[in-house]
Length: 247
Image 1 (cartoon, one colour):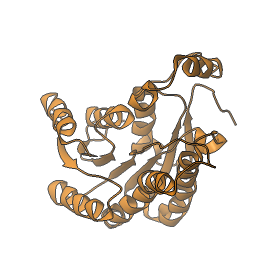
Image 2 (cartoon, helix red, strand yellow; image 1 turned 60 degrees about the vertical axis):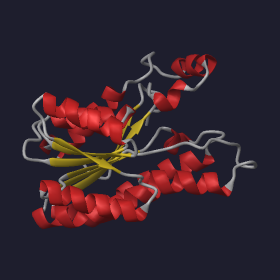
Image 3 (cartoon, one colour; image 1 turned 90 degrees about the horizontal axis):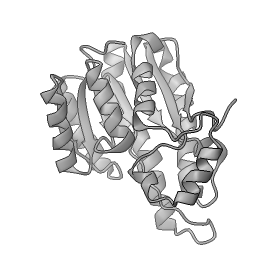
């Protein structure tokens, strides 16, 4: 699944799933524009990729800021000449029961997890339409499919990404651009490290494969959807959840 001559833009690339996606895409031959809030982590990742013979550049970005999204994507396109692959991965949680959830926590999660994806798609779609080739990949969640108590904002944002994925897929399919989503289940990342051992043990009991997923499990799915081998796949939600949700 060679991605030679392709350029990818990955949000939330400094750690976890985003970092794994950036590494996998680079290993597959793509030049990677790395976007996240942490300049230091981005620089370290860019150095790791270039040391291995790949191409990468760091672009500090807070995806909750529309002006930053426009500026950074413009800079990335100027740097690499185009964006072929967009991975909308950046995400946050602000968990609370809905009766106690503050409007600011609702807005923060929706803006970061969902609105940023729409804004990033708007900024790259011109480049993709011009070359009549593109891959848009949105990282959603099993909880966007099943819901989760205490995560009304997070579940709503991830469910929204699924709807966005299908709408965009229909809009751009005639131009040889695909839009798909990857829905991870329980993945071992910094976001899940804070969960209690009891919660983790109970979660594993709900996973038929009997283990927690890794960021690399998700990255492999993303690399496939970014490739020529997935040219006839669009509007699809690819579950990477160990069987936690089937059907």
